[in-house]
Amino acid sequence: MVHAGRRVVISGLGVVSSIGKTVADAWSSLENGTSGVSEIEGHETAKLNFSRGGQINDFDPYQTLEHREITQMDRFSQMAVVAAQEALADAGLSDELADPGTGIILGTASGGQETLDDGFQNIYGKNKARLNPLTVARFMPNAAASHVSMKFGVTGPSFTICTACSSSNHAIGQAFHAIRAGDLDRAVTGGSDCPFSWGHMIGWSSMHVVAPDLCRPFDTNRNGMVLGEGAGILVLELETAARARGAIIYGEVVGFGMSADAGSIMQPSAEGAARAIRGALNDGHVEPDRVSYINAHGTGTRANDPAESTAIRSVLGDAADRAAVSSTKPAHGHGLGAAGAFEAIVSCLATSRGVLPATLNCEDIDPECDLDVITGDAREAEVDVVLSNSFAFGGLNAVLAFQRYG
Amino acid sequence: MSADRNQEELLSSIVLILEEHLGEEYQGKLKRDTNLESVDIESIDMVEIVFNIEDKYDINVPLEEVAGAVTVGDLADRLAKILEGQKQA
Image 1 (cartoon, chains in turn red, orange):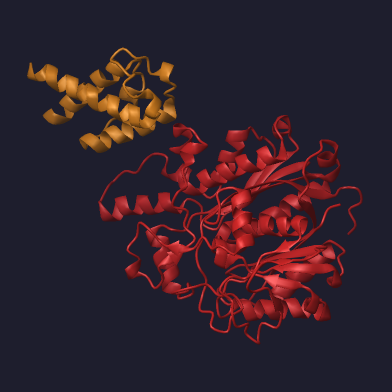
Image 2: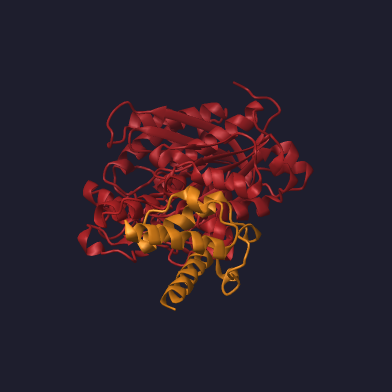
């Protein structure tokens, strides 16, 4: 379907991540090949089968938020609000936020995990009969969207999408479609997740999908993913409005594709992923040979990387030879509900700056991952269209397509 | 004398709980006659403050018995009555 006249651009970015608590710092880390993954602190990781993660140990919400705001929020909401602050300041929006055409669509895989974990420790570990009265208000997955609405006075359509590792991509995609269709004029979108609570980590350890050492996407010796926490927020708006007020435009969102595998709750499907990739290209009327770079889902698990490679090949065909691919998850960790947002920000900056980040720790590309995987140093390139893939547990897939603006 | 000291200790405890709830900028600023509304304590704050008091003293505080407290001292007095009542029970 052609949506004449309503082009959607990205005019603001904000991030809180283990590679940087601002967009400038995070991008600098990616350009330099610096990873934010380190030994997890505050937990007895000897009881787990992993010990490293993209934890943000020096995150201080007091630098941005008031005490009484902070006490109402779980960590995942705090990070979302701090990232939203950066994104909205970057976009230069203020009065527009109260306009009914401004909405918030955020993603999260697990909401307020720390609050939930504290609560369970109190109930089951200490036999307490009562919890802090704000427990539910802190852990509910919509809390981050609510706090962004409250902090910035956004009264338009606002909600949260929960699709595991695809949450942010689904959120950004829905925001894009809503603006294109005229349901919104602008959106604060992205996602957040903070998985480093004890119970949550035991769950991940029990699945045996987290790498005991390094995350090596597409590498022959890859042996799992690495968890990461944080928030990524993007401001999407009508291209005409952004241009009229002289906003910085990082890129244009041109396509969004979704699919469900209808297969396994844990194993990915190349066919399902391919349908989402094809969907994004079709939605944007983008020919495969315009794809310059793909920010892969690239978790580094045995299952994902070859399935994703097959999916990319099956859609792009020979054009896959000319589409550089990398996974930035070894740098910032797998942000779960924030992953798509992290990677959309990377995709925007790759597009506007013509620099493609490398896949850290990938030294020996698996022949089953028959793609131009960027290893070693970041690569300069002229970028036209970028795809950003997210393929979640439960087979829910979401792919975004961005193109260079101007 | 002992009852007065208990009252003073209770007041100090409550002031500490209030300061923790309100943040650093309120440290040392709350007195017996401080009006709770003047430090922006709303009903949701009272629910949380009462929870912390219940936790500290291992008592049950019916919210309606403290919801009408006007000052810090008023809150302390109402809690003293509740504590006394639960001790005798």
